[in-house]
Length: 326
Ligand code: FES
Image (cartoon, rainbow, N blue to C red; front, side, top):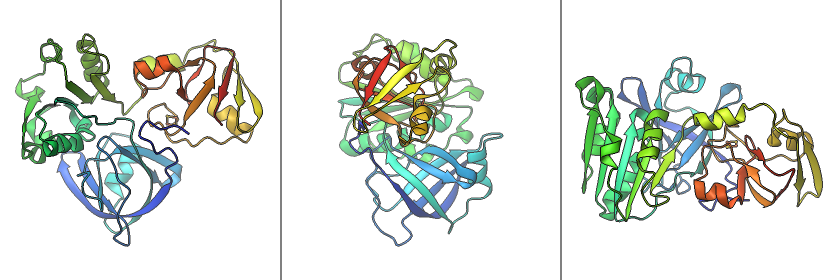
């Protein structure tokens, strides 16, 4: 199995809610610990947990604690109107309760660089917080451009502002300060990595503004499928595809209106999955032969072009046949 972080088959574990903290209007953080006080699997900056909730709900939340603290996982959760996952976290999750989590998994790896530019929009700051902390710890210069409605609505602002070696630049739309990503990224800089998480409009703007930077300089974490991926997933006229499971030794026909993941499950080939939207990476599967039609929001352009791996929950095929490492 494949994972760009090196740990694909992460299981589930039971953790205890240790603390729920109000961070900003509509945002709480939740500290999770091993019920016996044990050490937790290492979570690198950018990692997320799958939080399993009543009714079979599974939601992905970025870890926003200190990666060096191996006894606590902290997630930050924004209450979304009508959101069942965030509604449960805000309305029902209390200290002392036990929860089941999957992971940690990481599709947003934090790589060494000379310096860092972080661009966060609202709750998108959560996966960036451990990265800022790590950059500060490594003595690498960093700047966080933090886009919010107002300073009062910026979760973790005080904590971020206390980190050494860099600067938090707040762009508060209600206070008349807006970030120009075009200006920010006008000059490509060698050795600088740009990490961005926030609403799609912000991430698309950063992607466009950084298009002339060295390949791979700008990295993104998508909380919801990007709209071009959603559009591709909704396309009519998908061709059927034949999927050969190399290890299981079976061939599975996939009709146009059925996902590869579901067709495989129908034939008894269960691929681990979580979001089924192409944003969590749980169903990532190695491609041995054939050309995938990528419709996820995780793989980079280079990874897409290499075609060595695919998210079988949403992606299809450009070739009539795929041979997968299943
Ligand atoms: Fe989340 Fe496929 S199940 S990417």
